[in-house]
Amino acid sequence: MIALQNISVSFFQKQQSVKAVNNVSLQINKGEIFGIVGTSGAGKSTLLRTMNLLQPAAQGHIFIDGNDITNYQGAQLRKIRVQAGMIFQHFNLIRTKTVYHNIAFALKAANTPQKAIDARVTELLAMVNLSDRKNAYPSQLSGGQKQRVGIARALANNPKILLCDEPTSALDLETTNSILDLLKEINQKTGITMVLITHEMAVIKKICDRVAVMSKGVIVETGDVMDIFAAPQHSFTKQLVAYSYDLELPQRLCNDLDGQIFKLIYRGNEAEDPVLSDAAQLFNVKLNILHGKIEYIGNQPLGILLVNIVGNQAEIDNAVNYIRSR
Image (cartoon, rainbow, N blue to C red; front, side, top):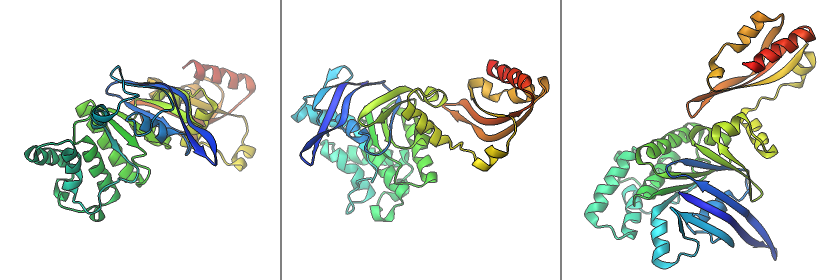
């Protein structure tokens, strides 16, 4: 478990102190995939780096499994960094080393015997589906393959925590999905705690159990991913969720429509029920779906639809009340 208590980090820019992280407290549970999402400059990566003390906190405390590591130095600090593997946006591979030696580097740094290094690298290459690229150099790899090497290297010393700093932002959509699937699989097989930084709500939706939304150095909202998407509370979170669904209608269409437009949010099993069909049969209204979709977050369905309802006001009110009750 990771617990941050009142963490602040400041930087000096043009002789002025700027708080990149401002009094942040978080609890990340053992074995979960925890996301931190926000726009560029929100302080996400700075906050992540306090968790393995790559970035010292100006104030506050960092706990791992109940131990206050805030002021660790020397051997204690090295031990924490071995326990907290890290993967990066731009891979950070050694260009002059093969895939094997990039992964082995982390093991050699931990004074692992050569025979154990060979066995562990072989195991990790199989885990990330790169057994046939053992002797390749980074320049011979695709972006997705480079990130798989980065993941294998981060896992080399069997860490308890995997810190992921924008791990898919340099990748295309298909490769992003394959990397996220791999991280999810590793989490399920090993039970490792993952903390994932991203500016993409789609990444949060696909892989995370819980999420913290960060803006201007402050955590504005925290919750289960389903709750955040179904019922965001903070205005900034609502904005991020709205962008991720992109449900805007053309003004021409809005001007030409009769009746009223409603946004319907279906959550859980109700998302699979024929609620609109039932309403159309029970009441003298016409229902026209203008935009929306049903998708699955953590195997739970979530539907968001924009629906045009046409009829006299009393029938519209009855239909809306019925739909709301369902």
